[in-house]
Every structure is written in structure tokens, then in C-alpha cells.
Amino acid sequence: MPSSSESAAESASVVIVGPASWNTIIVLDRLPEPVPHMQFAEDTWETVGGTSAGKALSLTALGRTTRLHAISGTDMEGGRVRDALRAAGVQTSWDDGVTERHLNLMTREGGRVSLYLSTPSTAEGTRDDRMRDRMVAADAVVLDLAAEPLRLLPLARSTSTPIWVDVHDYDGRAQYHRPFLDAADAVFCNADRLDDPVVFLQSRIAAGARLAVCTLGAEGAMAVDEHGVVHRVPAVPVEVVDTNGAGDAFLAGVLDARLDGAGVATALEAGARSAAAVLRTRHLHPLLDPVLGAVGK
Image 1: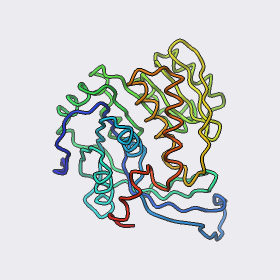
Image 2: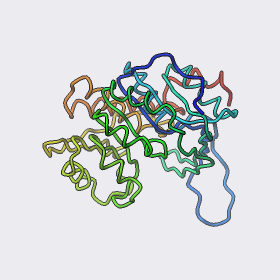
Image 3: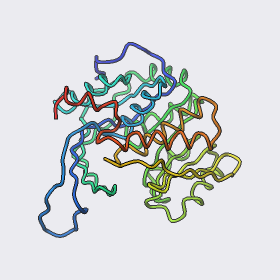
Image 4: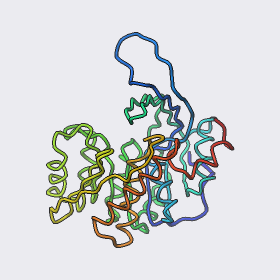
């Protein structure tokens, strides 16, 4: 059933549909080997997670009116997620369900193993008419990889509002990602599992996307625009505290700049600056730094 905890504002420049989670972060000197053994954690904390929450936080910080639609439970962890995002100023609409929870094993260099402890399924669809109205009124819709965005993908396509997708560490073959890729006006990914990022980006432009972007970690990012031109941007030098959310912040920076009319090269630079901002905090965004003490650890 729909949650009663919903922001009063109905319209937003960007509508985001996807995960908002409660995460436990454990920092190790190395990722575990697949054999029985013991390791000592260098650090550990709890925080808001979820790729869609990360994008919503970054866009909110950039001054872009944004609405996040996500699913969470009414349990303690779900309450923490909702309270933290509300306190950070993110407009949200929630459907009740299972709270998504992750256990992330991290290294200081950015290596990660994400263990999904619980994941929500789909909403009942009782507010799809309202969702469609919000998508129609928006300048862009961001659909992240999860069951609810997949359910709403046909609805988003029917609005003709540009769709941005983030397929993360896509390997170029997995079938689950295909509906998102086929619907996308803008595609984002990282290079972790791609044999040739440029070839993949070019293939998305050939398939009808207007922008395709691949983040390269400390090496920055590259993009192919609708004319086939390859663009590259270096990463902004920064002392890294935690890498969670950097890719989401990069997409948010590019999207915000493009909606302001910036060219691809300028938008990539904005994305790099946005990513650098979140690399300085152990949370998804500095907006959460003064908040999480109030919602518990």
C-alpha cells in the first residue's frame, strides 16, 4: 500500500525511480578470498545507500528540483532511510514494502563486494496515474536497475520524456539490462566489466541513444555523443574517503548540466566535480554528514 509519508510538492525537473537502502559498510585491507579465513575490519559504519538515493542527493545539492520514488519498509532501517533523505532535503514518494539492505565490503582503493541482505519487489501500481503525470511534467526520468523501475519502464516510455539509465558494471551481454538500454536516451556505465568501453558506447549511439557515458574511476570518464564524437574528461584530484556514490554523483552532474543547456564536454566536467564532492565523505553525499547522527548509527 502507498505510504502516507510523501512530500507535498507534485512536480520536479527530474523524476528518479529506484533503490534507496540502508547499508553497513566494512572497510578491509583487501577483499576476502574465497576460502575460510579471518580478517580484521579497518573501519565500519552504517549509512544510507542505493544508487537512486545517491543521484537524488546530488541533484538536490545542485539545486535541481528532484523527486525520488522508492520502496522501503516501516521497520527501523526503513525509517532511517526515509528520515535521512527527508532531513537532507530530498523530495520523496514511498511505497511500503521490504527495506533494501546491503552489506558492502570495501577497500580504500575502491574495491567492493556488495551483499544484498534484502530487496523489495514491485509496488501495487495504485499510484501509476500520478507517477505518469510526474514523468510527463519532468525534464528527465532516471530509471535505475531494480524491479520497480523495470515495471514502470513502459509507463516512462509512453510519456516521451527523455529516459536516463545507469547500467553500472554491465558486461555487454546480460539480458536483464536490455529493456533499460533499449529505452534509454542517455546511457551510463562503468568500465569494470567491458572489454572495450568505446565500442560499447558507440553501439548505444547506433541503437538510438543520444548520449553514452562510461566512468573510468581515477582515470575520469569518456562519452560518445549523438554525432559519434568521443569526449574524455579527467577525474578531479581529491583525497578519497569512500567511493560509494561517486558514479551516481557523476551522472547527476552531467544531467544537471545538460538540462541547463551545456555541451557534452562541459557536462562531463560538471559530472567530475560532482563526483569529487562525494568522494570526500563516507556517505552518499555531504548533505548526509550533519544528518545521520540524528537518525542513528
